[in-house]
Image 1: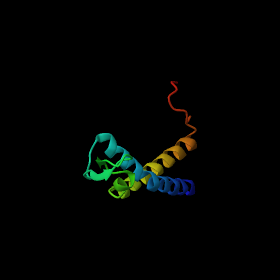
Image 2 (image 1 turned 30 degrees about the vertical axis):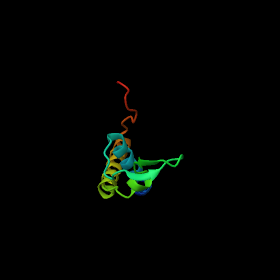
Image 3 (image 1 turned 90 degrees about the vertical axis):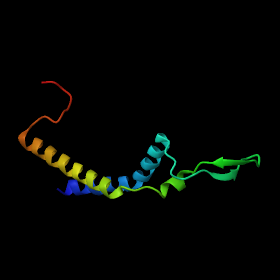
Image 4 (image 1 turned 60 degrees about the vertical axis):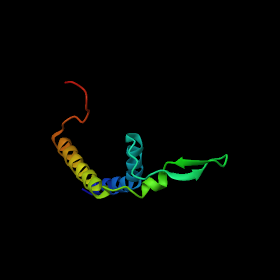
Length: 98
């Protein structure tokens, strides 16, 4: 069980760091623009409309708590199933036919 707790803490830390970046990636890939373009200047001094950057999108992310709960539950279930398989002597290799 201590191993599962360590995995949960490690996974939670990685999720906290990576969740905003994944949220931003999905917004950009889908093409959803919740923030309108702003008027700015390019390298040559001309006025152009600029789409929001990484930090503007990072302020919008949500859904971190459900993602942490899902990751924790998945880790606990995986460790319990692995423990039962080891107790029964079941092979742990996946994808090989018997």
